[in-house]
Amino acid sequence: MKNLYVGNLPHSTTEAELRGVFEAHGAVEKVTLVTDRDTGRSRGFAFVEMTNAGEADKAIAALNGKDLGGRPLTINEAKPKTDRARGGGGGGGQRFGGGGGGGHSRDDYRGHPRQPREPRW
Image (cartoon, rainbow, N blue to C red; front, side, top):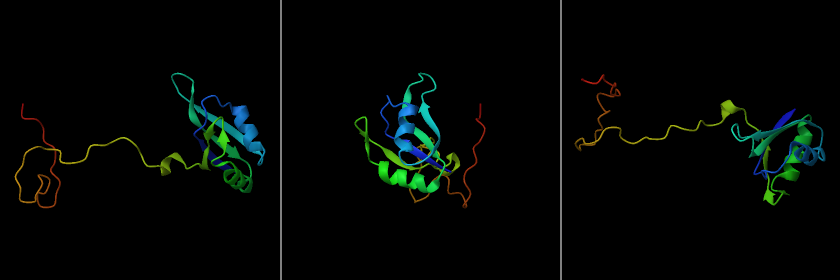
């Protein structure tokens, strides 16, 4: 059993259409077309579970970059959610303004990061 990520899908693609494309290369266990929670519209990617790992590898080789509805498909082995890098966060840089030079940041107190304090008011 191998789970494949299929990206860059036209938003008009149906699960049946996608199943047909992959069944030409082997047995398809399940097709999951990812849709927007609010609108129900396709988000442009899907997951295809194929029964045989060898057939799945052949499907990747045959279909990756192939045109579907005017768009080149991106197909690879799906990675579990826990393995992917987490998004969000951002920021970085120095948190506090001002400060003198000397090559030290305000967090450089004897190798320990500065602990946040309660406001004085």
